[in-house]
Length: 252
Image (tube, rainbow, N blue to C red; front, top):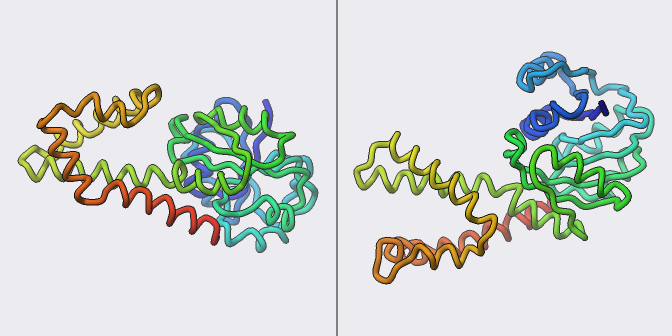
C-alpha cells in the first residue's frame, strides 16, 4: 500500500485523509504531537506521526495542507527532496512552491469539504507527468477535473473550493424562509436536506436552465418565488461572489 504524507493537520487535511484512509497508508507531519494524535483519532485509522522540524521528505509523496502564508516558514524545516507535492493551498503558484520547497514536481489541487464523504469536486493543474497519478489519488475522494492553467484553477477555487460555503448560505436562508411562513424548524431542515440531495443528482445530467423551466409553470408558486430571487439580485450576487473569491485567491 502506497504511503501519502500530509504536511499540515487542519480541516482540509482531515477531510482528504478520511477519503484516502482505505486505499493508502497515511503519515501526518505537524508542529504539535497532541494535535497529531487527535488527527489520528478523527481519521479513525493508525497513522504514522512526526514533528515538522528536520523532517526528511526524500522521495515522499506529499499532500501539502498548511496555510498559504506559512510556505516560506516551513521550507526551512525539511531535508531531502520530495518525489511530488500535491498542494491544496489556495492561490499559491507552482512557481512559488518550487522556489521554496525541494521537490521534483508540483501539482496544485483544489478539493472541497465533501472530500470527507468521498464527494469532493477536485480541480487540478501542474506538472503534466503527474496528471494521471493526481487524478487517481483525488478520485479516491470524489470527482476530478484537470485544468490547463493556474488561472483556471484559481477560478475553480472560487467556484468548487469555496462553493460549499455559498450553498450553506442558500440552504440556511431557504430554511429560515419556511420557518418564517410557519413550518417547524426540524421539518424545514429535513425538507431542505432532501431538496439538496435530490437536486445534486438532477444537476449531474441536466442544464440548470432546463431544470428551472421544468419546474416553473406559468403564474405558479415557483415563478413567484423565482421572481423574488431575481428582484433580490441573487444571480448578480453569485457572479460577484466568484469574482471576489477569485481575486482573493490571486492575492494569497
